[in-house]
Each structure stands twice: as C-alpha cells, then as structure tokens.
Image (tube, rainbow, N blue to C red; front, side):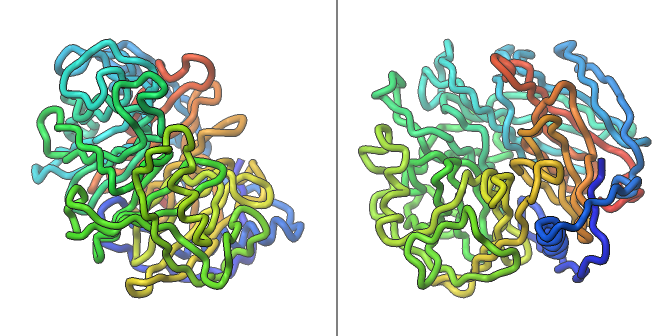
Length: 463
C-alpha cells in the first residue's frame, strides 16, 4: 500500500551536496514532516496507485551461483536483481562469508564500471579462526566485494575479509577519503570472556586488497556504536548510539582525516535546556539551538560494566537524550540521523543537525512517523539518483525498502520473503545499482543473510 498526502506545502529541494556517503534533498523530509503533522491532526490516508511512478510489485526469484541460495523479491515491473555473497558461502581464501550482513557503502575504484562494496557483519558468536583479527574470539568483521557492471547486469567477482575479530560490527559509515568506519555495537570485553575489549570504531580503506591491521580508534569513544557521518568541510565525525537512552556524538580529530592521531569527543546539548529529552513531545520543523559538551574520558575503564559510561559523562553536563539512534549521513551542509524508537508513537524520527561555526548549530526534527503503516523503525538511509530517499525497515510485520518523495509519499519499492529485514542500502557511485542486505528474522536467522543488487528504470519514477 502507498500512503501519500494531498495539498502538501511543497518546497524546492536543496541542491545535492558533494560529500561521500550520499546526498540528500531536505524538501523530501519537509514533505514527510508535513505528512506526519496532518496524520496526527486526523487527515485520512489516501492510497496512491503509482508506487512512486513504478507501478505494482511482482515476484521474482534469483539464485546465488556460488552458494545456491535463492531469494524471491517483490519489485516493480522492469526491475531485476541478483543475489550474491550469502552467509556461509566461500570467500577468496575459502573461509565462509561471515553472517549478520549489516551496514555497507559502495566506492569507485577509478576504473569504469568497477566498484567495491565494504560491508559490515554484526556477528557476536565466537569464531574458531585466528589470524590478523583484533580478537581471536570475535566473529564480527567487514568484507570487501569487487563488483563490475558487465552486459547490463552487475557481476560479483570476488569477496575477501578486510577486517576481522570484532564483535557486533553491524554498522558504520563511509569517509570522504574512501574508507569505511566499522563500528562495534557493544562494550563487552574481557570480563565477558572476550580476548580484547570492544566498543570501538575501526577504519577500513576500500582500496585494500586484503585484511587491514585492526586499530581501535579509542579516542572516538567506547560505547554502543551504530552509524557515522563525516563532515567533509571540517573533518568532524558524527556518531550515533544504538540504545533507548542514546547520545549524539561528535569526534573532532586534531588533524582532519587522521582519525588515529587523536582528537576530542563531544556530546550534543540543546542550548538553554538541561538534559533535553528529544524522544517525545517534539514538533516537526522546530529548530533548537545546539551546542557541544566535552566527554573527558572517551575510553572509560567501567564501560564494559556500564554501557552508558560515555553517555553519562555528557549527561552530567546537560547533554540531550535520544531514542535508539541508527543511520547517519551528511548532505548539503548538515548531518541527518534516524531515531528508530523516537516519537510519540515510538515508530521513529529523523533529525537534522546543521553546524553553524565551530561551537554549535541547530537541531531540527524533520520527520516523525505517526504510525507503523507509514514507516516503522527506520534504520539505514540511502539517497537515490534523483535526490529522494530509500529507507530500510527491519521491524514491523512486512519490512520493506521504502521510497520517500518530496511530496511526502512513502511507498514500498521492494519486499523480501516472510518478513525479512533490510539493512545497509547504498547506491553505486553512478546511481545505476542499489545494493542492500537482506536477513531473515528469528532464531538463527542471521545465517541466511545475503547481499542483493537491484537495477532497472530508475528514471521511470521519482527515485
């Protein structure tokens, strides 16, 4: 079903920015915000038959030639997809592909029609192998996939481990200099039986041909990480925290681009408000003055016993609290981040932080979901070739890859089987192919995760 608005106040898009990690048109969010406000005021949803201009969805089944794993997707007419790199399928070194496919970014290589995907794996279970991994017991990792566009379809050439030995490294984000920041969503450590402490970010250059030396970026903080976004103008790295009691962080490196060289960690505070609670009672479109307070100890000794050890430092200085922060990206001079459980209905929010000089900026709620039918628990966000959005759902009865437009229309672009969850959506640098990870839900379901590539007549519709 497509939910749309009527008579929206349509504002023009901002021009797309040039930063790595995606571009975004703020008009889309203004439309969504208006849609949410009207829904709360009692406007009846109207069904649009257009699905963003792409028409009805139809079932297609494709098989991964390496693993034999088959998937059925519902896609619009004219679109196709390929399956690759299923959990457990052999990589270049014959080691099985790790499970729990998560966040992902696509990088250009400088060669026409060739790209690299760097993909996170959020596994927590113990690994049997040793090697260059950060923790010999950790099964979390990143893998790098070499992809080539050939004869009208993407061809997956090989996959290799690019980072290993982490735990719950399901998300992260790209940098403007062509690397992926892999983030651990746990602060477990030696007290829980691991060989090393966890809760850090690691940098993985996309150009590496093998496994990188794992270097925990401890100055960026030890907490339950989710996603990151880098401001290419200042070099500041914005970070989200995946907890119901969450902070929004900024890491300012001493030398932009040198994340391992030290820097300062800060947490967002709403100006003039002590411990401002963003989770409920907010009004879309309202801008709040924002500032930053210092986190004196980004790697506290008590982080394993208390996952909020970093958060509590900012909280003690009046910092704001958010609900389960997820995807995060930079575009058009601002940082956008999703709160999966925020809002009066608990179905999700989308926030904008716009820096104004070095000291602070403005915080604006640009979208709050009024009901699960419109959007439930937004996770990763990708920007389409036309400047609209792809939203990943990993909750609800029938999670979808949803498109979102400037007019406030939210529609399903793709669905998987039996409530499979979507993660890590990203477009190829030329906008031709949408890559995403699909994972079944339930006990042991992470073992069935796959990466899919979707392509077709994007120009036919709004994306």
